Image 1 (cartoon, rainbow, N blue to C red):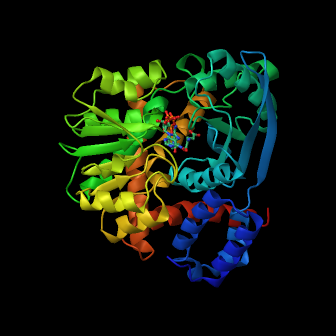
Image 2 (cartoon, protein in one colour):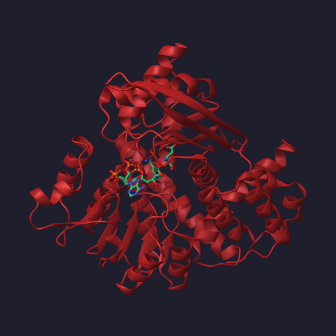
Image 3 (tube, rainbow, N blue to C red):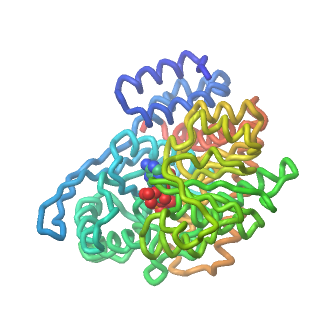
Length: 447
Ligand code: NDP
Ligand code: 2IT
């Protein structure tokens, strides 16, 4: 969709020039600008104050060397990042990603999206992201520990419970958070809520592990209710088989769905009768193995190399692996095969052309910034519990999460109607998320 506002086009040209070749970051900014195009003419105050000029430039970008020694005694070097994008409405908050594909563009797109997502949670958290081009796959626990310790040896200078609170993302789960937290505590001699996703014995919150996947299903259920549909007896495709995918599958099954496929970066499993989630958990979470092993045990399922998961028939699709994993062809296949709802568990999993197709076809579409906000929202609940030095029960945290996801749906649905794009939740999420941040930035003057 072309942007019509001259102001937004001028800012985008500046962003392109200043962030040359940063494909993912430019993609994320463009999508937000397409939505802001609906409101900017009516808000000359935002233009005059240069709110959007400032919003697209991170407040602070840190990149650092991470040296470590592998099990063979060989010195390795990775590049670490923390991009503190926007702190207008709270301390910087967002995950750390350890994956060989990590670069400035990817961390920037994730940090930029996190601003709007965190705003939608209604909790006081700013936007940030970090990580490293480190590949945890095939590394021993000792290697992962030494890497995490080296990473935190630099990162500790830049974070604090009231400044910046990182968490997990791809390749960073409770094992990595444990190593990172232990090193922070050792270096600083402080036991503080400087990370979320912690283990339950040292300040973690119940439900944080499940929160992104569960939240995705709570959000999706709200969206489905609008059309008188539900998860019940519906075939569901879920890409990925990590933290988000597994707990999305768990909640979808609990809600009556038949989850018939999951994937990893090598291929996908197809289990027409419904997957055996305990087996998936054993392979992926306990053994850190490959999904291909599933079909060796469950003979009724088939394993397929490659990324063909979206070509299967389904009612609901939940992309939960990584950015740009669902292309235009995939969107066309889903629509043709009867899919009526797509909700994004991963960040920016659908390419822009795919989103356009979903919206045009009138399919229910829940964008990542809203649909996967349950993870960071529960992280903010972990911060609250750390601040008051208390822990809430599973039911208490889960109820808050449900309420947050219901409110996000309502707010973005209402915003889509109020700003001239009824039912377009992409526009609703971008505008509602933006306005709260913009309001705070306006209040501060030029900072
Ligand atoms: P995990 O590392 O637990 O799992 C990632 C999954 O996605 C794995 O199955 C992995 O396959 C697959 N995957 C990763 N990269 C690729 C790739 N380049 N191509 C194909 N498959 C890939 O990560 P999470 O489950 O935590 O994160 C998944 C997505 O959800 C990410 O987009 C993340 O940003 C987003 N997200 C995560 C939140 C959280 O709380 N963890 C919160 C909100 C969003 P393999 O095992 O082969 O590597
Ligand atoms: O993309 C995300 O929202 C996350 N990876 C979770 C961030 C967090 O701070 O819990």
